Image (cartoon, rainbow, N blue to C red; front, side):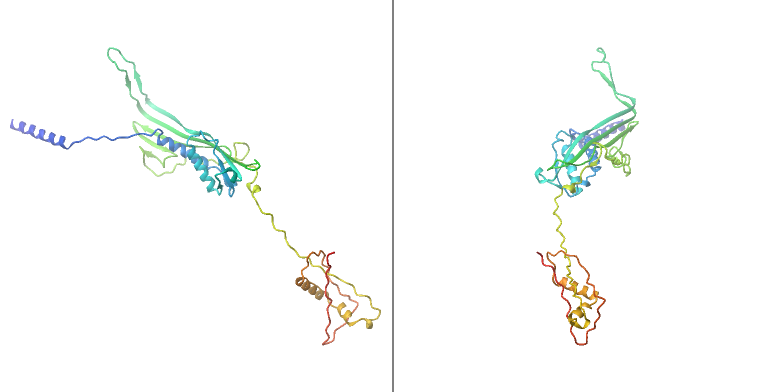
Length: 336
């Protein structure tokens, strides 16, 4: 009897101690209007679509981005900011005013959004019809899944094209670019979700990564040849409209040589020494003298062809030692 009484007292004291140290707390949580998964799917699809565009034909040009055709697109600001960053990364110079740019780039969006598909192996949740006498409130049978899968995807279908602002001439178009992002959640016998997709780094279990495998299920597609409005096309190179200064005219000098024949002499003894010595000058020496004279006195406004000076092989004379033989000075035709 005493043992029972002591046990009751000990149990009472233990319960009082537990109640004394026990407490309660409330954790408040809230959800945004749009889930993080939805926003990740859309932004990932936009990143993939803009990244697959080849903007190199516009490199080095002044660009004004026309944003008037994407006012109703989902996540419009993110799409335009990503496109502006891609233009800058490819060497384009952005202008805030249309008049300051040589080319106008117009952007449009055909579809930016998400889709969802659910697959269930098991018993879906159903409502049991209410019985007025026994069951005043309708009862519901909860879902009993054996295996469950939820597939979500983000889709971005966008396009941009460029034209010359002053003339309106088409320059380039990206073609229709369509990219998708994915997120898959799987439950097996109530355990899960096992998450995998382009917005995750490998496979995750309830938000925790279980490996570091990179996702390779959705590689970027290869661009198709330009054949229509849905394909990339380069109509006119932007360099065609670039402002370039004309090349400076090349300045060339033309060598003018004047040749005058000597009068025929009847007797070799009657020929003056000066004329005889001048006639016997070799052709190579005469050409060198003419070239030296042309360098010293540039020919300005003279248009004449260079004619090599030939010596007369019929006359031969040798100068004596100490005798100075004056060479004929070349003359130039003065412009009339």
